[in-house]
Image (tube, rainbow, N blue to C red; front, top):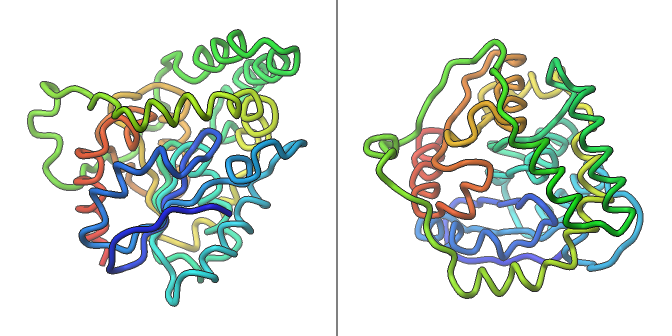
Length: 276
């Protein structure tokens, strides 16, 4: 698998969401590299560009394990968001000894939600549109399913690493750099493949709560404060509640690691320091 590496210190592995290109986390990695050896890993889809057929979390977890064994002499902290968070959950459940700390930011695992079937039908419509060659309609439907707000059932205890919450309401997302905009344009051809072959298999995968419960506080369910009530936030909250863990809130929304890299890195760094 392709990966980007920088910095020196305790190992930290970053797993992006969506089609899974490591480059979308370049700014976040740059902020974290002063105190960590940061590796951002591209997914099988982003690395192979065009591999057909559905992709599944178990296979992605094995890919991640292979990179960990190849690069690190000790178990790394692993941060994943969205689909990368689902991969991280699978990795922790299957190979707990190879992960020092797992931070899972908004894993959209439908099975954790009481209204899972409604969301499942919505994402099936996304996949149908993608297969029909209607990428714009598929993207619209996905946004509708993922962002429609609903109450958070059984809200867990919330925690906020560092002091980022002070004055946060007055801040704005960082504008994308020219390099990030260029990368988004280059990755546009992968979006239909993500919508057809990754979104449903990942979102409908089952989280192994029994295995994950064995990790205790080494598992950190997390979500973005700006996406409260949205499907991925609710899934993260349900995961935290189901395991009796607090929910760690980060700056931004579902894409906080990408569009608020400075603030997000500061909060993530504080969490990593607290966990040492």
